[in-house]
Length: 198
Image 1 (cartoon, one colour):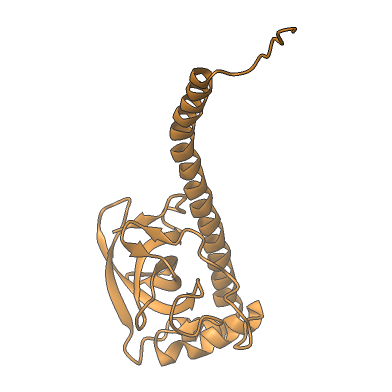
Image 2 (cartoon, one colour; image 1 turned 135 degrees about the vertical axis):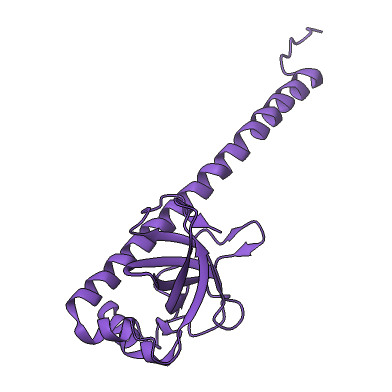
């Protein structure tokens, strides 16, 4: 009887190959996840830049939108923030919000005014962008949904009280009521690629 010479991997060789693959995966997976996070943040910054451009164009083109955007007669919602570059505190006047995920509470389909005096601005903005209550989901989603314990599920529009020409786009937690802006994604001051939070 002729003995067949069968070649193949031994158990030890197979275990060594699996161990090498495991080590490579342990090195590469966190790096790849970091790239995914950065790409989501960059996407959100790009979306914030588009929102900012639309708002600035609208304010400059429409007197009604301009006067409604800056109308504080009804008592504005003002929160204190810190400038990431200078470190100085400033007051941010909130104007409107848009839910950026399906899990956020609120209208979710249109820009909603923080104060009733900004309703005209929101109506004009929604009409310009083609947003309506019949939308099935928000048009601009927030892709980077969290940073630590923070939930980013709502866009915010506002301006600095001491310099009204500085319009800012924020994201934050909108799970209850108006919610809280937590991270500035775009402002004329720093034109942030990473965002500023306080």
